[in-house]
Amino acid sequence: MQEIEATTRVNEIMQLYPELTDVLMDLGLCGCNYGRESHLMWTVERVAQDKGIAVDELLKELNNRIKR
Image 1 (cartoon, rainbow, N blue to C red):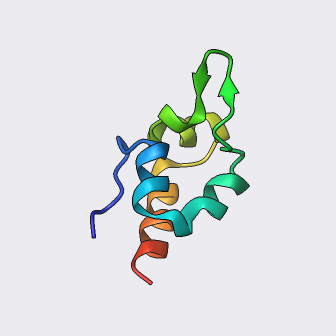
Image 2: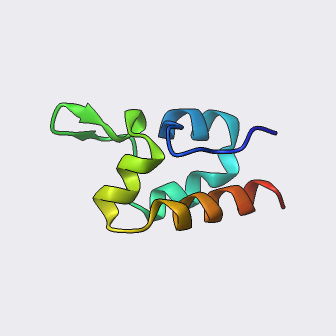
């Protein structure tokens, strides 16, 4: 099992950990285009910045879920 890092992209998370799809969807990351850029190419750090949450908290949540 590979730990999710701030530089991990959303598409990598969805491929490696499909059980996290609900968490990503709750954050509004559906894979739709955001302007010219798809959410799938965003890093965890970019997601945290966009959603106004601490990157450390988001990483903790994601990594705790994959360790269950």
